[in-house]
Image (cartoon, rainbow, N blue to C red):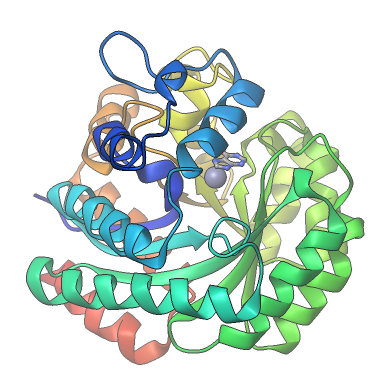
Length: 323
Ligand code: HPA
Ligand code: ZN
């Protein structure tokens, strides 16, 4: 299995449906409505996806649940060849943005990740993410949780959720707070919003990476600016196809963005929701654009260069890619 670097994965969004069903059963919670007849997550569109995501997440109520989740998720990632995973962690779901509770959840997640590193050879680093549709006020509390736990393991800060709600500038305080705490920055944009949304994230939040960013393709001057500034896109083609932004991999703009000089990387976003894995993403891109092993090796290098981990960790992971 080719080793892979993943930069954009939501921890709760990576929860296998059977794992969430198991937790619901243990806690006598009825969330059967979020699954289809085959036991997969069921949703109508992106906004329904967000609701189903939050319903699934409601079964995760203790640090121990998150420890088990972390192991289950890393097992899936490792099976796809992922050796380094930057994962979005949400204090909103882990203790409700209470700093004390958040630290307990984080400790449990980190201990599970350390165990996975020893047994499966996969390294996790955390990016704290605030949730756009929860609003700027809650994002401030999330940023304070992030600042409190920033370090060599919590390495970044970002924003996910409904891009149609509020503006990047409304979250400026939170991003400034995270930056001052030494965190590197990324923001979801250009998924449900167009080029103007990507422009605003770059200008108002001063991020070095964009989650998705693919709809920048609708404005070539913006594409050129992204390329010139060296801003990295965390592209999740299977997610975009599953949610109907593009009809298939062949119509996905990742190849065009690359051809125009943008640093693109590949991730899964919320793999079980989108019926994907990192192995499948690579396979589908190979089929759609004939990308070969040398191309994927270069893609991995771009991703590792854009990773938010410290240089020692980066150097250690680079050796795994060479092996
Ligand atoms: N976009 C925005 N918010 C999200 C996503 C996504 O793809 N996944 C989980 N939260
Ligand atoms: Zn995402």
